[in-house]
Picture (cartoon, rainbow, N blue to C red):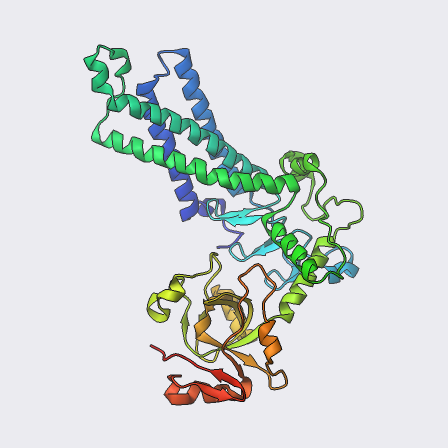
Length: 445
């Protein structure tokens, strides 16, 4: 999936197809049931009721289409700041071969750097960012109100329909207007469930979107701020971090919903509060990346990883029951592959496979993932001979990230790896002893 695809092809994806199908299913079923429950041609109230519902449905569809077609705003390829002296305060994107402007981030699904990226939304098959944030928020708002309105109409129609014969037996013919068939009652119940589900799911998403807009923070920036606070809890000597883009809730809201901000702006320079500059946040990001690289650990694959999201047959139930709650890719590994690991879970690790330049080019052309999650049991950590593990290091070996901190296990010196891999015919059934450290590996099924 690339950012340059045509507008028509962007809708040929399960996300937009599913979203539009849900909207139209609720709309058409509601209109059909409403024509029996409160016919618009019999009263002014019925006409206004249906007109309001159609308006909400149309606004939801319009904003959905505009959010997809407008896009978030792509940072130009090989972008560089006008002042070359500030490049050391910016991150460099190897894929786009350029620097990342402030508040810009690279989306691996769009394969481009996105201006003021909030998140990648599969429902619009595009990122939510600088240019389409308002359209996306309006889509959520009108979808929620329209679905709530539709749920009320469907509920009332369902009540009238199942009590039809009760009304007729008491002479209330004017209330027995809803007549169900087998298909219509199924569609009414199904559409009512969809409408309630949309209200709940999109209501939660709208809450988080409005919270981020109120503070002028994207979803990614919230994570950066959280890590900045965490760093200062553990390193009190660091300078206090001040988020530079919170201008007050009125200006924050205007920055998203006022159209001229998008029409006149270019999504690269942003107003900041006093005492901050354009690169306050990027400097914090660079510092966090440096710490991340400092805690990177080198692992070597001793057991093939299939790259499956649920490797039941190759890894067992325990690994499948505790997967990372993320849509990030799973890494396919072969025995002897070397991986630079930066995130740690109980049963999973996240890292980047060390590849040659030729392999990197091939992966870029074929869109193969070189970074991703893989089962922890598939790899063993390498330790350089001049960096022995001590008991103190073992006791203080928690990773300062938002992930669940885990103590490092399965450590081995580089010089001893081959002996371990080849021991017992590669089955790894007996523990290997090196000094005071014991390494035991289960038999490969």
